[in-house]
Image (cartoon, rainbow, N blue to C red):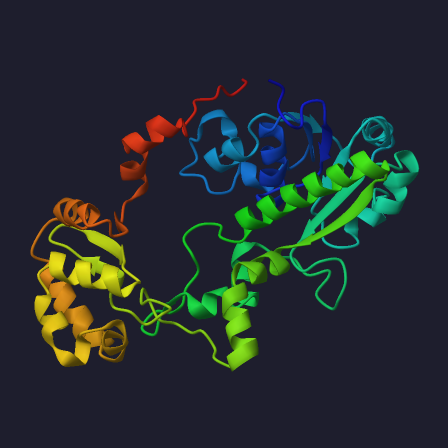
Length: 345
């Protein structure tokens, strides 16, 4: 069976992660993605996130995984010969993507108004930190900057650590998914109308959409989400991270029924017998005291035993694992998640 985007041609001028991961998603669904890079520097991600100077093939693992399934072409965008080549590519393309700072690609002669003269039905997508309009339109942005600007870091971390950046690209990747969805939506509209479209995707907009519950809470009630470590947004000690005898687990027992089953399973019946903490509301009021009792109980046995015991009670529980442990999980084998892909050269 043909993939959804088989036969689709994408000309991709993006680099680093948000744009390239979006075009990777399109490539995984069958699109023919031609990645345009500078012959002098190439994509910044080629040298970013490298383990050391001996990376195979002269490319970082991050670059290889983000650009799998694409074709590559090195062009100097200011050279007349390059302009001829790009003109031919765009003439037969369905999608063009770019993530230059706002206004930069227009100065090179490849803005939307320029490109639509070559190909009126093209879907043209710009991905930037802050969007194409407003006082921040020309500002540079990477994942960490948008985590800060969006308020994400203000609610990630603990009072003792201060605002904390996530250990992975928590804005770039959702922006890529948003971008791919926007392009797919524009292509669907094009089926009915035959018309192209300009898409303006902002990393800040995406980050804010990820925190819509926290923004809505403030707009409705005035309550500002802040640094609270691993504590539950609901204030429940039965939704938290706990140390065990040999690691850590995350428990999510939100309902009264699940909370009671959790407390009984870990040997904290006394919490339920105490009139002050017999229900969720009481445990919320006495959060720290209940957390301490649960922590003492959970330190008495291994992570595996607690996961087995709480899992038998249908409580959502998971070991906090590192990457090697995740990759060794048989669940991944059943889902066929990991693939080995050859690298040219």
